[in-house]
Amino acid sequence: MESTVMIKGSKSGIILVLDEKLEFSKLQTDVAKKIKESAKFLGKTHIALQFQGRTLSDEEVQTLIKIIEDNSRLKIACVIEDNEKQEEKFKKNLDQALSKMNDNSGQFYKGNLRSGQVLESESSIVVIGDVNAGAKVVSKGNIIIIGNLKGNVFAGAGGNKRAFVLALGMQPIQIRIADFIARAPDKEETKGIFKDKASLFYRKKSKKSVQDLSSNEMKIAFVDGEKIMIEPLNKDVLNEIKF
Image (tube, rainbow, N blue to C red; front, side):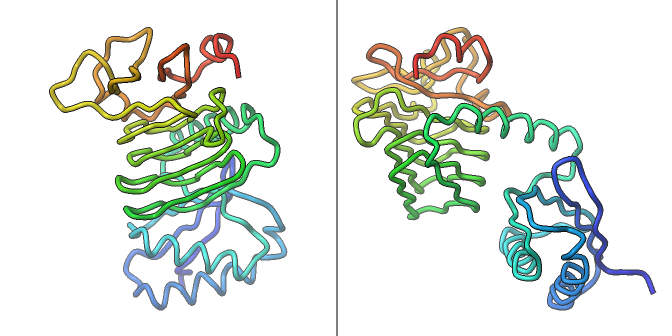
């Protein structure tokens, strides 16, 4: 009889191949059994997880993550798309982001933040997931979001204007860094990316529209003078910024 759950290795973690037609309640049992049988081989580590074989809802993904962690010594750092190039891009962006954290006491949060949820940290924080509209992240240090930023963020909440915000999908409603605030523009706004009375939030070297911020490219928001700026994350930009 063909197995309903198979485990394969990937460059940054494991791939779980799931039966497409099996009832989800039965699939949960099969995943638990398979992971428990393979726990010794899988070891103790933080990994990226990828699903193949069937489409899962966010709730089902979270259920399976809990099953995996409960039946092994694995910690799921993130869930990535079923796409080899996307996996390589994710790993590169994650490594680049983490290497730039200037607070060694940084924390991690795994999961999507939904409308009404508030995540606060006394130190820098890495969110592995999406920050949806209506959600908010507040940190006295830096904020790194390995996912889409569509809600509000407040970095440098203790007054540190050298704090920064990183995100793969940079489409926030509002960004605040120390005492500097920038908000999303009206739909008809085309000159700036984000602006309000006090600051302008935009790409210095690009005239692309706000829709381009949704591209899967790590971007950084930081204070430059009296303004909040946004740039694609690369070596040239990092050399210009004084953290």
